[in-house]
Picture: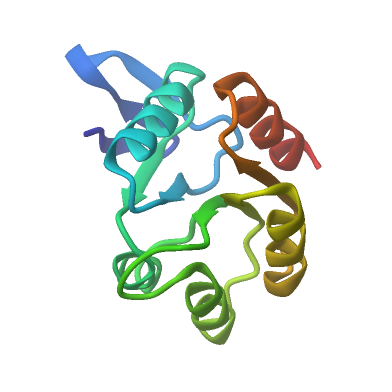
Length: 141
């Protein structure tokens, strides 16, 4: 887990300094699969992004009540509160943050992305290179 100490600077494992690439909030990764959530968070941190994680939509909504993420990576099929419910509640809170949808199958991913107004989608399973490329593309647009 990382901890923020100064605006725009985040300390990672062993005190290594990670910069917030765009000076905005961290990327929020929301996925109920612990190993996938961890892999995505590690890959993003290695690339220098500040990252927070949540295991379901309800946990993510509680976090967004006090924070402003710069991007949300969102699994659609989760217990407690799924991606559709999360996105609806997020918009009710007034957040207009870009979303990258993750779900099984190209057709379902495209439909889910359209349903929640996401900027992009990746069908599961996906490679970390494709994931990072999608993040970079969204963050640079």
